[in-house]
Figure 1 (cartoon, rainbow, N blue to C red):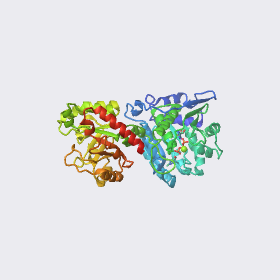
Figure 2: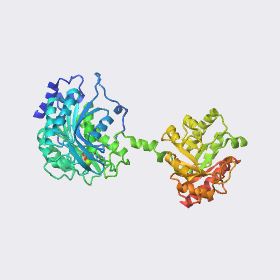
Figure 3: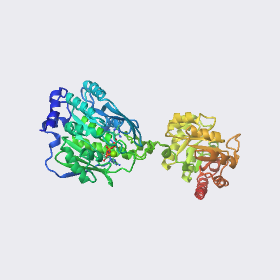
Figure 4: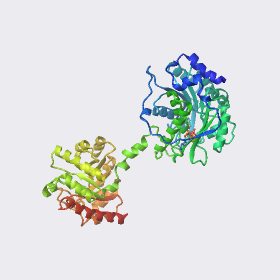
Length: 563
Ligand SMILES: Nc1ncnc2c1ncn2[C@@H]1O[C@H](COP(=O)(O)OP(=O)(O)OP(=O)(O)O)[C@@H](O)[C@H]1O
Ligand SMILES: Cc1ncc(CO)c(N)n1
Ligand SMILES: [Mg+2]
């Protein structure tokens, strides 16, 4: 047994906090046969690490029978941009469902461009923070990040000797991916002589591994293997050399060495610049998994999985203007994009042939609302609005539900005119409101970000307000005189053009439009005019299907020609 393994076992023997029946499996096995020496041959094992599906089980905190949860203490620097450092550690632990306490060693002024300043916390105050946490709380695993002075390394090692923990994860932060120095050469001896021999795993990136070994260049996976072995000689039980910054590598390959065997952990390199904080997150994630009871290799694999998934989810996230952005630890961004982001929920091209129902016309022709809507979507209507001014609320709701089924089966959005309550009750795709209905801003608050809101506008001021209020499109008219709406001022093609040009939102033209004049409307030549809304031209006709088909053909051609 090496001196350092004795030290680890001594932690369990003397600390008095670890009861064998309750400790995590890896701790129990490590007491009997240390988990870092269970392999015998020297072959390299290769693993391809795909992206993980987030399992239900991952989402639950592991709470022991004595009401404790796995606890990681991070000893690291603050990153004001919150992509790396303490902030990344907190997010990673929260995402992995373990508790995380924090000892802050430095405060950095940092963003996606780089590190603009560093203020180092005195070693006495680092010691005080360590004392506060470790004397009171049950910490399972300590993870270290930025340790900017030799004296800080020393007070940390003293605390680790005094307070027993299950495992120590050392991320020897020295140089950020942006190339900024976070800990100078003065800490190197402290790392090599005191901290690394106590570590269960050390996780240098390529540059840090090189510095630890006296500036030997690392250019390939084979160099990483050699480096892992040499760093292992400093005394840590396991070494993980991270290959995120390995040049010319299509895969993201990390080399893991447990003192006996090499493992190449390989994952697809995610094509993103949002990689700020991957190193801190990886180390925290390893610490979190160890705190839950994983074996070392399994903790490392899980952590790498997690990074790959988080990077993939955050590929398109935009935070800051610099070269290297942060990513989202809670894997929310992609989901958001898929379900409720503005672009995906509303496609302005859906405004092309906008069918608006009318109860009086349906009565006249002896049709139900659902029959009329079915014919319109079959004929090619690209969005439908139910405008039922004189239908009882209950009947309207039932009809809306029926129409929604029909529209969903054709992939056509269904909006409700005026009645936000009905839209909410039937879970329609959105509403269309006028200037005397509830304000669009309040409508947005009521409906949330996932629904479509259209607003009728006659003036440039109204169009501007609709945009400010969070609407998705404006309906502009009446373009031509119409008898569908009493006392409706006609704004003509000129009015339509003026409002459309001033609008930051897509526009659908409305009012007296049909087969005879739809082309003229589309030809006003304003790019955000996306289509026409029609009532009588479809619903006050004998065959809705035929009328819709004809109008759709005409509009498709017009839209194609003006593209
Ligand atoms: N583009 C990427 N796609 C997939 N995995 C990546 C990518 N970039 C980094 N990784 C993985 O992220 C982890 C951290 O690696 P990296 O070498 O970037 O650490 P680091 O330089 O210490 O990070 P940082 O300084 O940005 O916090 C490794 O497991 C690495 O393989
Ligand atoms: C505070 C801090 N710790 C670690 C890193 C490494 O990414 C960083 N950029 N900033
Ligand atoms: Mg990096």
